[in-house]
Length: 236
Image (cartoon, rainbow, N blue to C red; front, side):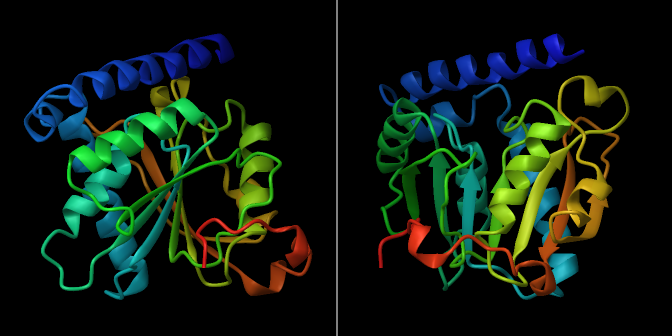
């Protein structure tokens, strides 16, 4: 089963690179809507933001971080589009360990007209690297970051130590046969690292990913990495 997951996880990455290359050399906005998974991403983000809205009681978050954003940052683009027209612009910061992915996605977003202060980028490996996420209301972790439950739990534990108490962590999981494609996020692994699961949604339609929304509990953050070892995600 792990081999099938590894094979599937490689495919979206290749597809994202190809699509990103096409978008940077053509009318980007028009071509983006023709992306194979465009509608699925739109519906997935709509589901996730509505789920967030239900647990925050309408207090809409303004600063998002997306960890494992890849060369085609569809999550960030869809979040930005969902807030389009709002008087208080949303800020989305993308993080990926692949320098090439960051370079491609930055060029694409500038071509689409998103300024650095609205959609930012940073090259870093979230696994085993201190990274300050305290300034963000919501942190997304891409579904394919961490190929096994053990690896994903280790990554999540490190992320929690860098976030502010009360902030939200959005995790993409899977259920039923869809767990053949994505690792399942277990509740027991979340509470063990200081997270309070608030809402789990398992769609039964064309949306593949489940969503797990958790809140950082202040009582479990006593073992945070010392501040001098933390590198700022966003300057200033």
